[in-house]
Length: 449
Image (cartoon, rainbow, N blue to C red):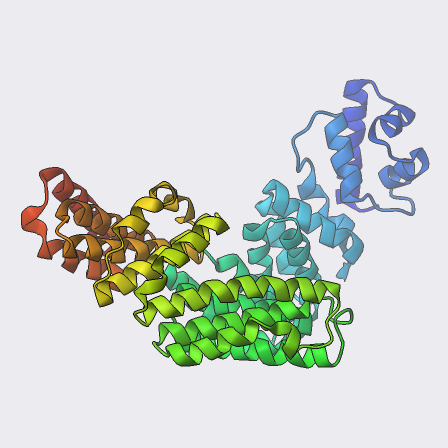
């Protein structure tokens, strides 16, 4: 009998004696079949599972992870791996923080590089449970040890690491795009759709408009092909294919708008305004998705009209935003309105007053991938607007707010732009505003050092 198995059994039997339990009582308290428990403790024909060990720990009042250091021989013996026991064991070790148990097991697993296939399902189980930080460690092991660059397991690991990396730090987000991008077309088709959409969103947040357009066009092409092949169920997509097709057009239109190609953008918007005509025939779910894109199209046509200098629709646009009653859409709309006001000299004071209640809530988006960037640009355009209209005090407040957002998101160019704007009006700033500005600026200098 293996020494470690005897040690594990002795520890458990010792606890049974201390608590005055016999085998039947322990079986009843843990919910483990008495026969299975007997065989597991004696190591006759059945090794103990990690769930059984956890159940015993609860009965004996022990902390999660009790005796995990003695469990490894249940999983690995004589250079043989037991996947059914090893995978849940590593998952539980990660969940309860028994990193001391993980390292030696990983070392034994990777003695044979082919065993990396055991590590990937551990990462997947942790990811599905929302344990993203813990799963990243195992995905990285797959990335570091899989040599076949066309491996689907490798592509999925890069994809998961890309998703896990996303936050409001612009530099980290861009680095994750660069690392994942070469693997996007090696994913299963259902994951390709989601990955292309996520890539477009991340690049939108980074204002990488060429990349947004490229990923959007790939999304349009793939979703169109899958729709024509009628593979909706076969690829097990999270959303209807109409959704991915529409989102591809949506992001392509946005990219064209941001590059100042307003007429081209309008043509794209008009396409997703009538998806049903493009993708016939559609089922009921597809028609519902198409209806939603009509709403998006209406908002984005307003956006393009305003950016092209049409101030006659401002009241209609404001009424539309008010009826939507969605703070994120109001943020996007007001940012566009302020940008146009600064370019064409519109007066939008009434619009700002109309949505003052929403403006006070924009801080709710400061940890959001897309809307944090929108909030930053809203503050910048509002600061410029306030300065142009002689409201220096408000302009300085918005500038410092924009600086703080740029600092938080690690957007150095935007930070420098705000510093330049503040310095231009420093002479009219109050001492309190100067102190706030210096506090944010000093924090930036300290971080650079």
